[in-house]
Structures are given as C-alpha cells and as structure tokens.
Length: 228
Image 1 (tube, rainbow, N blue to C red):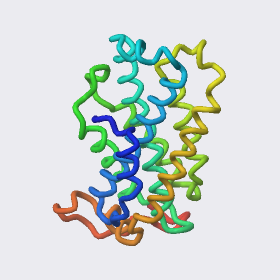
Image 2 (image 1 turned 135 degrees about the vertical axis):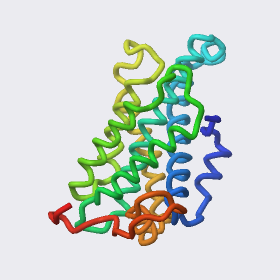
Image 3 (image 1 turned 180 degrees about the vertical axis):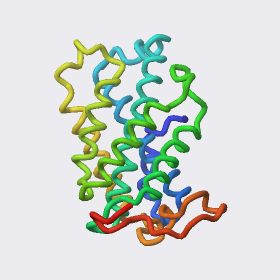
Image 4 (image 1 turned 60 degrees about the vertical axis):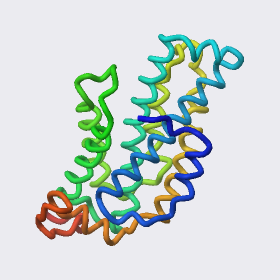
C-alpha cells in the first residue's frame, strides 16, 4: 500500500465527486478513504509525539517496521468503519440488512484487504479482521443505521491500541487520537453522502455473485422484522 497521507492525495480524494454506483467502485472508494485516514492519523500522531526526534526515529529500522505494522492494522480497522458508514448511508430507512447484501459487503471488505500484498507481519492474511468485521456488520444490520461518530468510536479506540509508540508515552492520548479519527471520518462520511448512488447500490449489493457473473435479483434489504 503506497503512502496516501499526503496533502496532495488528500486533495485528490476530497475533490473526487464521481458517482459510486457499482460494488467494485464502492470497494475501491472505501479502501482509498480508509487508507488515507489511517496513514495520515498514524503518521502525524507519531511525528507530533516524536517532535524534534522524528528524523532520527523515522530512520531506525525497528521503528520503521513498527510504523508499517501500525499503518496496516489501522487501515484494516478503519476500512471496517468506512464500510459500516457506507452501509448506514445506503440502507433504506427502517429496514434490516439482507443476508445476501451482508455476505456481499463482507466479501468486498475481504477483497479490499486482499488487493494488496500481505504485509510482513501478516503472512497468514486478514482472516481475523474479516471475521471481526462480519460480526460487527451482522450486529449493525439488525439495528437502525448508526451515526458516524458512534461507528468510528470503535475504530478509534482500536487504532489507539496499535500505535507504534510505547503505551507509557501515549497513555493519556486516547481521546486526542479518537477525536482526530472522528474528524477525518466525518469528512469521509460527507464525501460518501455526495457520491454514493444509493438506489443503484441497494440493487447491486442485493445481487449474489459478481457484477458480471449473474445471480438473483433479490432486493438488498428487507423490512425490519421480516423473515429471512
């Protein structure tokens, strides 16, 4: 995963207003948004914490490896949050997430992670993150659509837990990190509201199989309380 936390990349992501109307476009858009926020927040926190020692710290092999690990884990964590934000924006009001759409979103999340070579610290892949996301999505899909701040509070705490700074040096920084993530993710949610083609995505996510492979035309959501 290339570094996406630059000002220029942020401008590109923020200025893209093209509609998102396919499952593949949704996957790629959410992946780019999560990668940008994860790498920006983790790197800027470490730079601020190190202060004048940042040039020296960022040249130490051990820290460089720890930073890479932290950014990868933050990406997977915040990717789940961004998927949940998108689900809350796409889902028709007062409806539960249909099992077909649920499976499709989990598959898209897994595909977004698998799109990159496995990082050195994860030779076995991301199965634990995919399983955790599936559990969160299942719970979220049976409740009213959540607000962005409640969604990202979970990811914010988890990202704080994987930062490459010793806990004794960041113990009091939890609220600062979670608020920084919440600020960035509020902007992500705003961009998604403008770009997601809700009606088309509801149909696309409710269709089993790939976009070119056919499948059922079952609607992606069902009325709350109805049978599966």
